[in-house]
Amino acid sequence: SLSSEKREMLLTKAHSIQLNLNKAFDATMSHLPISEVNLRTGKGSTPGWTGNNLILSEIATNAIEFFKLTQLTKDPDFALKAHRIMTHIDTRVESVQKKGLYPTYISPSSGSAANSKVSFGGMGDSFYEYQLKAYLLMSKSIPMYRRMYLESIEGLMEKMVIKTGLETASPRVYIGNLEGPSFTSNQMEHLVCFLPGTLALGVHEQVVTGDIAHKHMQLAVDLLDTCVATYRMSGTGLAPDSVRFTNSGQKSEMHIQQPQFRLRPETVESLFYMWRITHQQKYRDIAWELFKAMDKHCKVPGVGHANINNVNAPSNKEDRMESFWLAETLKYFYLTFEDDSVVSLDEYVFNTEAHPVRKITDQHQINFILESFQA
Image (cartoon, rainbow, N blue to C red; front, side, top):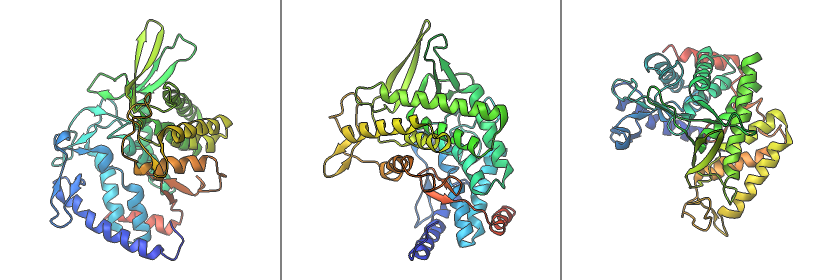
């Protein structure tokens, strides 16, 4: 997607790196990419804390990058590998409770479900994001991805959306994890706050229309309100990494669960999409509110910005600045206050690390990628 004198050098290097990383696909019996791979020996490994299983978001967050590599390098293998993963999940991984909700762990040997937890936060988030975005990147030419996205959001709305304090003036909507076959947790991770932006993008792109579009947009608005409330609940205006909800009679309360603030981008990302799509000034105003809080409490003069170990004790900083603070959080802040024509949503899709990738619109190139699926 770059236009510069260094474009070919970067493309050659990207192709070379990915050819090495392809060894990850050969390290499992299922040919799903393993978590870590020794590029010299080709030997792979999985984290012990997953029970030596693969993680859904890790194996299925590559379609945007791989389709783009195939377009630019004319190597069909990249697109083939990405599409095979999506097809495998769609046809061979058992859904949890409802079609479209997939477990966070996948067996590297059989390629089947290895647990029954469903998450739109950690270990699941970007898989659901890429169902929609890969569909948009390819100019809506892969109906399967649209179907998977709609099934997943339908399952989410039926099984994982929780509304609290319905009798009060300010009810909250949040997304809990499915913890097993019948229990939805009362906790929500900050990572879930990417979802309002994704839902709004699907409506904007007319992936959904009519009553369903209205339901998606209403969920986006309500969930983003909750995400913003997690910032406003602390003394610093910074959000904890996760919150939990309790009900006492007719009253619902939100509590800090994990007190760290890790410079995360998800809420800012959704504010960016909601501003671009609705042009309601409140989303810019909230973005500026959040930026000021982050700059005030996370800034380390002369160095950068640091994680906060406790949102109510901002002097207790971690000696760490996340790479996504620069790649995602600040980029989404910047674009929220830029003209819509700067990295236009009509021309670009943002991958899960907020890198803008130009949509593939040339029909010959689209056909080449689609034909690669048949190899």
